[in-house]
Image 1 (cartoon, rainbow, N blue to C red):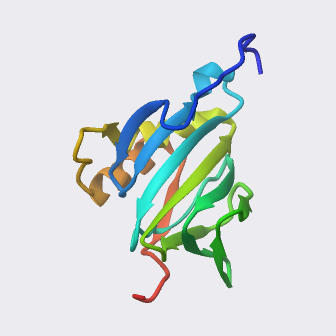
Image 2 (cartoon, one colour):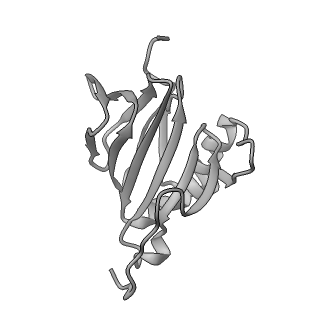
Image 3 (cartoon, rainbow, N blue to C red):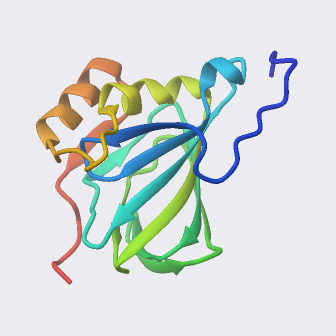
Length: 159
């Protein structure tokens, strides 16, 4: 990390962006602040939020569940995870998740930090009422950045 300054963001602090796949991202550390090593965001999600089956070919991902419950799928494995769980997804591994609880908060880190290009392209500054879900923008951001590869629809049955 080439940054010579510590990064400190209290609860609720950080750039707020509405993700077109659903959810509010609060950016805790941007890649430019970490010399490109990584980025960190807090993701606020609501029940039923689901991701398509996807992978990050060149980025490792860590997710820490601050609160709530998710169903996480990787390969043939499907597991319920809750508060305090840590999920490490190595680069290139297909995965997806669905929010089971009424709401959830996840702290996500991806390395290297160039992975944030997808999330910035697939979001907009958050307004007071949140934003719209637009999966066509998710696909466009995935294709234009190459950071995320959408492999298929969400691999979950409706709860």
